[in-house]
Length: 116
Ligand SMILES: C[S@@+](CC[C@H](N)C(=O)[O-])C[C@H]1O[C@@H](n2cnc3c(N)ncnc32)[C@H](O)[C@@H]1O
Image (cartoon, rainbow, N blue to C red; front, side, top):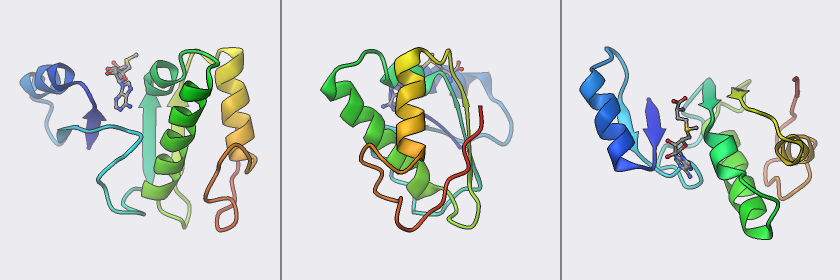
């Protein structure tokens, strides 16, 4: 399963015809997948695109994204792998959220093991 909220991106990827991958137009901050649907979530550049500055609007978008990632991952050991340029404010948001702060709505039911 591969998502992007830009229709043009999904159309281009579908045209490439990669076997075994389903491409869907979907906003990563409000996904339509059931909770616990995946063992892995892999992000290459989406967090960087979402976390473009230090504004409060950006921060709340990033919190919504992280909460959605945790929600769709299996609570029995889901893994989130991110490829990021890791600017200082991106790193700050990752550390704050996965230490259970910054609007993490899963911190009372989940434990997080965070590695860079
Ligand atoms: C740097 S590009 C990376 C694209 C792809 N992962 C790659 O490695 O080629 C970031 C992508 O994130 C998508 N994106 C940004 N915000 C998004 C959101 N809220 N939901 C889904 N996709 C989003 C953009 O449309 C863009 O295609």
